[in-house]
Length: 201
Image 1 (cartoon, helix red, strand yellow):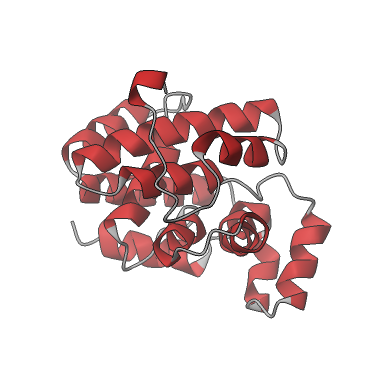
Image 2: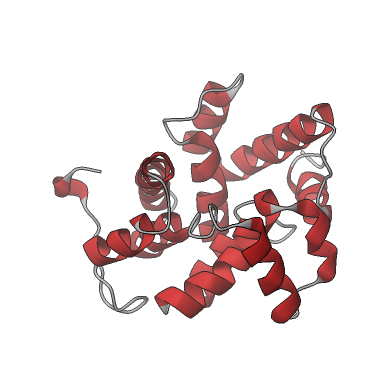
């Protein structure tokens, strides 16, 4: 994101300004991951502006969405047990944990308490039956950011720019297909997302 389009933080959702928040987040991840985070933010801010969603909340949620992505599995599992998360999470690993547990860590360690931002972080890995416009923006932005290269990504990007609900459905369907083809476990909420946003359209 160039300086001309940089989002100015009001202080309503985090006591950090954008540069300080970026520094906090960058400390918790590799350079490769951080560059992904910046691309997701750029995409999320663009989608938020298009779909009349708070660009400030989109920026904060996008910057923080992978805050826990590179935490050790042992640490994440300990948090799930110690903080009384649903133990049914345990078999699904970091691809699911970093959204759900990540929202907890963002609130605890970064002091971001806005429920809409935290929910968007929580749901960015799975989607949900009921999603706010901000949830959809972060879910889709993470999937179609400009560093993504997979068959169908151009279709996903085109849908993101024309119909956010269809973009959610496309992502839910193709994520499910990818998991099945990889013989990976499917988290129940991912199936719920597919049933709501893809199977009914």
